[in-house]
Image 1 (spheres, helix red, strand yellow):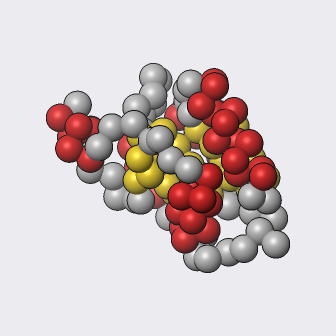
Image 2: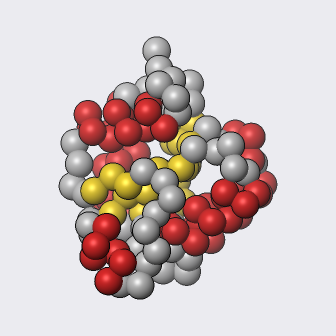
Length: 125
């Protein structure tokens, strides 16, 4: 069963997304910001199969986390999620993501499809 590192600063959103992933058969590890996620990845790098991170977060943005992950573990799939469009993110001074972007709000079906695609079509069953 693949393990997703879910990085989201809003607790209620994090819980809903974690529940959707668990219902789809994924194990979920949660982090409240990019720094916590990066610290976890350094401690347990092989336990994580995919990173799903919000873009706009305090401490370390999702795009900053992506840069670190791509530098140190380029084989690890990453999906970003945001309530902002690509254009709005760029207007906020954030670089266009180098990884897939899932726009909030999304359905469980959309979430699971993006995660499965990022994992190379890996099934949880």
